[in-house]
Figure (cartoon, rainbow, N blue to C red):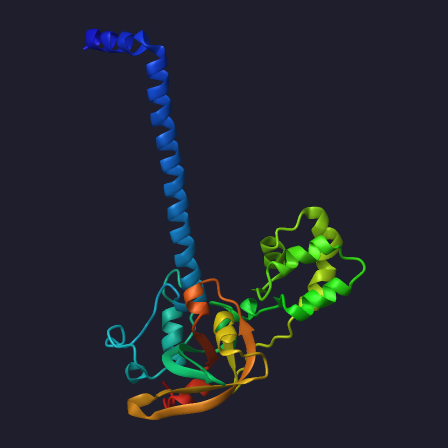
Length: 279
């Protein structure tokens, strides 16, 4: 065995260039494969986490038939004692009741199928916290026009902002990150840029009859805060579900798939809409 090893070692260095090129090729191939695989798995983890934290949670308690047929017909009677029992399970951080269903949303000539999520506004703050996802800044043609009128903001900074026209942001940090400002630019111009881009937004109160609309869906339906959206669907045990809802706020969700189709309302409003009192 030792002799075989010696022969193999000598053979490697008989042609140094060949050995170095071959070993370097293998080393860099493995290195970049590991880096790309790590990046891929990290992206998957991030997407899963974004979906879980903004919509479903890690664990759902539901009717045994609901998974195969997600209809409001398979909802169940809710009680505070059930929520208390679930909250006592080890590692459960928070519990929040939901009603989940579907509807057809319409505004003007635009119509789209949407997911409807009903929440308890206070309890939900301990779970997905949609209030933290309210759109706070939006880059519009009007805000760009105001920035161009400013004598303190250089044209090249306004041009950088304009490249993100119609984009919306839920925080100042996200705004700064996506516009790729340098530290000096942020310190000198950011606060002045944010002022014309600021959006007045509101969250739901406990018995609010309004709704929150996800950002991309609001863009598709041409909705702004204060507008009215029409929802049509099927309620509990075939009851007709149709109503008008004022738009209280616009939320920006990290998952594009959810951001394209989500409307949030309070549980009492959803129970009345779907004729599912107490569910």
